[in-house]
Length: 384
Image 1 (tube, rainbow, N blue to C red):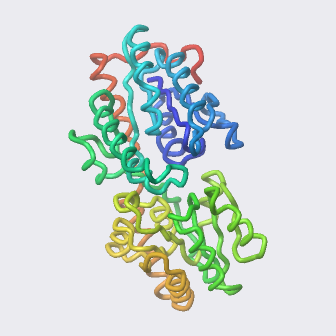
Image 2: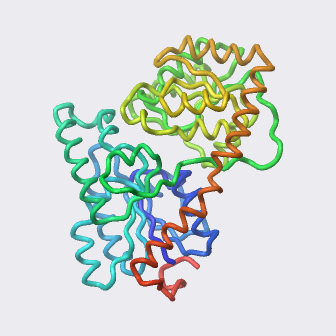
Image 3: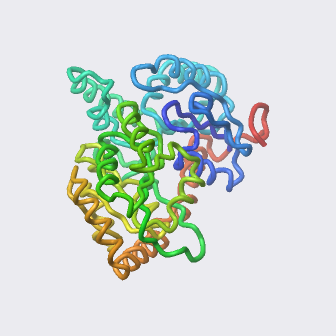
């Protein structure tokens, strides 16, 4: 198959898109054309996929990205067996584009990979005026209902099914546990992995680092929203914590091994109540104890598998106390790290789902084409 993968929002090195889904497609021998905001985020396509650069959609500046995506879909879509979309914004680029594609021949199977609760996420966007949030939520729900009538949907969480009328396949966002034995968690370094924002607890992270002082170092790995960048840069400059910024997936995950704890300090927001933070699964997979706020799916993981400690929302003192407890109790630290690692290997390994992801795309193509896919898998403009 030939798959056109498109995002104008996510980082081109996004773990789910590049390191899991695209990797699974390539492992099965399929050809991938990956359109993403490479230049805008200072990165280049990996050598094993053909990349197409798109503008990035950020804040209220989304028009250029959507126009470029619409042009790309019209130009390259006809040669694809599957068009895999990763942003709800891209739904706005589809109506006219699908009509043009239909005139060019059989439509590719168009799939929306639903990463989050889009309507709930709007509540947290500082660039969305408060008066517009309620009507935008209504509009998003209407767009989702329209999308499920015209597109194929993949869901990253079972809870997302409640937003839709039909049943859609779920491909969870899991981890790739490293093979072989891992070093035990240490007692002097804490990590945070992922996007940094107020709602994700970036300012709480800084306060937690201050409370832990020099005895325990705090490392933050990830890009930051504009409203917390200055605070993180100042904390890094003052030696309160080490902010690495965005790191490619392999380098970011390498920073986890041997850490005393992995932090997930999400606030109590609607978008987080139905989503399992991938960072928590990554901590477990790398044998790192988890310290998390009580978002339902995070707390459920910790309580079911005994892989860490749960602390109240927006309480840096409690987070610091939990870290100190793990630092001071070697038996506890080793026990919860081992429990998390075992659960990740047995129940939360992406490789247990990679085949199901590719199988689902292949099944949809066969359903649409009566069992045939493009014979020219090495067609012009596609990596081979």
